[in-house]
Structure formats: structure tokens, C-alpha cells
Image 1 (cartoon, rainbow, N blue to C red):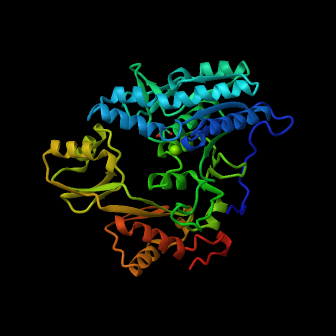
Image 2 (image 1 turned 30 degrees about the vertical axis):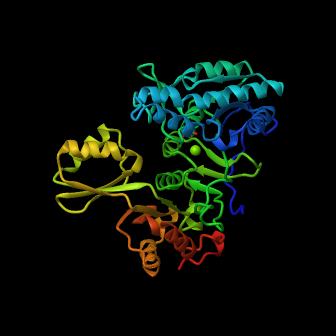
Length: 419
Ligand code: ASP
Ligand code: MG
């Protein structure tokens, strides 16, 4: 249940009578556009924002499970589809959503134009499957907005500097939306999704998890990096680097969701812990006889996203990487010709909160709680606002529940006892 403990919420453009026309970017996820009825509802929501006076750019995801289905189709065709062709294939889901939404918007009496990522001017590097945006050439969008059209942009894709279609990694429509918001100087980037916002824990696991009214970019970065799936990690980095205000909210309700904003001292005073996140899909690697520079250069060369890194002794390094990158990692380590082993029976539970900086003892309490549950952390990593423990995968859910309860995240912040 939402609370309004604090009011950081900026007004969105076009609401004040004399405000100049602002631009808003509205992004809708796959569940929000899953079928024609939902797409029509999204079209109405977009039109309503336009009628309130904003210039509207909407970024759409593929309908429902379309992307998963396209990926499965590719692997039915070939055990190792070429990344270029895979991108050609999986980028179509978003185009379908945009074309259909444009049709619905026309029927509501507004002008709209759908654009592919490429047509919208999203220029990326050449890394298929997880391309990075290197430039946004928004001329075409500006022109369409000046002609009083609603612009629909296919999320998750761009065109590479080699003129090939690329995709931005799973969940990449968030990053499309943020990049456009930055390039257009939008008032805010609204991420419409199937949950009400960002919670103190995954509400499917912890029914008493609370909606967070505001989190800082840094907290959101840590959360996205440690298992909160509501925003793609890269979109949060982009938003922080470009000062884009993010508002994560429900497609199915008018309620305010979670604002992702610059840290502010009210956050630090209020909550020691903002949330507990978890992941079940990480593989840990132990590698010997290679220096860190050589190892991580090779992994970077293969575009592997390494997360946790621990130098456990002079000769041993432990790191984690997404399980989906396992084949690449194995290729790199075999290529280096050094002894290594991996474990994929672990998950990770993380406590995150900007207030940790001024409240010592979080790690100690976390270990005590896990100990009470007879859960043994295998590897512990920290940042100024995070403590993360790799624990056996089968213990992850129990760890999340115990920590959420022990840190009283089910209570309003003001009612927690920080002892
Ligand atoms: N449709 C893509 C995916 O499922 C991109 C996105 O929705 O953000 O990953
Ligand atoms: Mg998503």
C-alpha cells in the first residue's frame, strides 16, 4: 500500500496553465501492451497526456512474450543464430506494438507516427544483443513533434555505426526511453509497468513489501544491479548521468509510483535500508594464475558483464557474471589457459539503502539474521550503500523474508526501530 511519507514529486509538464509546452517520454512495458485491448488503453493514456498539453514521445515494448517467442523461434531454426540476424528478428516485436498503437491513436482523433529505433535516430555501437547507445539524432522526432504528432518509438533497438540493426539487451526499452528523454530535454521519463513502482522487496515473494515513494539514482542502480527487474540497469546509469527524472508507475492505475531522483538529505534521515533485492541467476567463478588486468580485459573484450569481484589471495580471483554469459566466460577462461572452476547453485541477497552511510552495523545485523536462519554466506561484497551475500540458491527466498522482517521493511519508515 502506498504511503506519502514525503513529497519529492515534481509536476509534469503542461499541468500549470501558463507552463510552456514540455516534452514527456512515456514508456510502456510488454505486459502493458500484451493484447489489442491493452494497447488501446495505452493509446488512450498517451492521448490523455497529449491533451493535457505535453508533447508526447512514447516508447513501447513488444507485446507480452513476443521477444521470448522470437528468441525461441531463432533457436528452433539454428543452435547458434548469428547475432546480427537475431537482432534483425527480435527487433520486430517493438515495431509491431508501435504501428498498432499509432492506428489506435489515429482512431482517437490524434496524429501519430511510429518509428523504428533507427528512424528515431538511436545510434549504437556494433555489439549485437547488448549494444550501447552512442548518439541520439532526434531530428526526425523533433520534426514530428513540431507537426503536432504523437511520436511512437520502437524500444530496445537502434542502428549501429555500421548501419546494422542492433538491440540493447533484455529490458532495453527502458534505456531507449531514458536516452530519448535526455536527448529531448524531457521533463520526465515515465516508465509504465505492471507493478505500482519499486518495492522494499519483490512483492510476489513478500506480500507485505511496501511501495517506495522515492529512491536515489544510486539506490536504484544498486537495486537494478542486484536483481530488481523493474528497470534495466543501463537505463538507470543513463538517467543518473544525464539527470533524467524517472517515474516508475503502473499502467493500470493513475496513482503515483516511485520517483528516482537525486539523493536528498531527507532520504538519509528517514530510512537506513530502502530494500532487499535478490537474484537466482548468477554464476561464481574461481580463477587462478592470472592477473586481474589480464583476466578482466579478456572478459570485457568478450562483452561479459562482470559483477562481484574478489581477489581472495595473491593468486586467486573470484568473480560473478550472469548465467546467460556462461558460454562466453568459459570461452575466455579456456582461452587464457588457466585453472578455473565455477558454481551455479548460488543466488545473492542484497540490502540496499542510502542511509547505511550514516548507520553502522548493517552488515553485522545481516550476518546475525542469516546465522539465525542457519544460512551461510559464501561471498560477501559491500559498497557504501549495499551489503550483498551470495548464499545457496535454495536459501535465497528464506533469506529475503528474514531480512525484510528483521529490518522492519514492512513498517512505515517512521515506525521502524533502528536498533
Ligand atoms: N522486448 C524486450 C525484452 O523483452 C525489450 C523490453 O521490453 O524492454 O527484453
Ligand atoms: Mg522491463
